[in-house]
Amino acid sequence: DAGITQSPRHKVTETGTPVTLRCHQTENHRYMYWYRQDPGHGLRLIHYSYGVKDTDKGEVSDGYSVSRSKTEDFLLTLESATSSQTSVYFCAISESSDRLTLYGYTFGSGTRLTVV
Amino acid sequence: GQNIDQPTEMTATEGAIVQINCTYQTSGFNGLFWYQQHAGEAPTFLSYNVLDGLEEKGRFSSFLSRSKGYSYLLLKELQMKDSASYLCAAAELDSSYKLIFGSGTRLLVRP
Image (cartoon, rainbow over all chains, first blue to last red; front, side, top):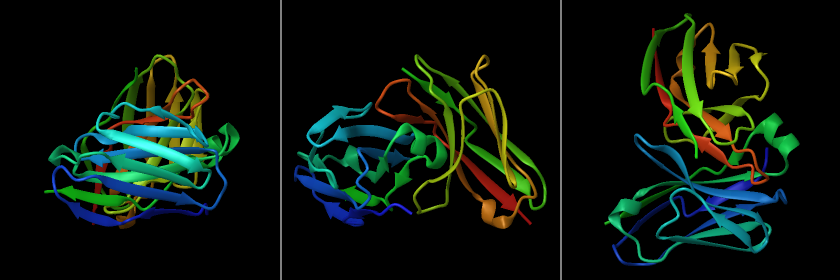
């Protein structure tokens, strides 16, 4: 299985504070994604990366920024956390179209973020 | 953009067969994925269809009709451990390999 870890696993933070979530992979996969999962909405794409320093917005990117300075790390930052950003955040990785069709994304275990 | 619809909840009996439907509307389509997600865990890959027809993998099968924008996941010989959410996801037709997910169908398997 691909090595992908998310940290922290759980976090409680106060409204207005900055928060950074980390996704780390040991598989040298090119593509990395951040999703959030909320009841009734399923998984929604926040940002994704197709290489070092190459990132783009997903469908729910407002209030979030990302950075990818190394292949193995993809950081998601909430500049000023709001209660609406309380969610479970999943990172996913993928290598190529062939691997994607055979194995799909590999997901991290998720980060449960609560903004109070 | 893409819109993906699937039922919110389904209930079935252990040993039975259940079919979970998914309809999609896309501006560019590059295949349909199914994932399984147990409560509190990450989604895991079940299947991928890009051509019309049925793909079988053991107790699980997935069907796609591109002309109808329709897919289903068929689970046979249901087991209690199949109680989970099942996520339908469409791949976009570009080089980003982005997946757009439906809201998921929560399946409860009863004894």
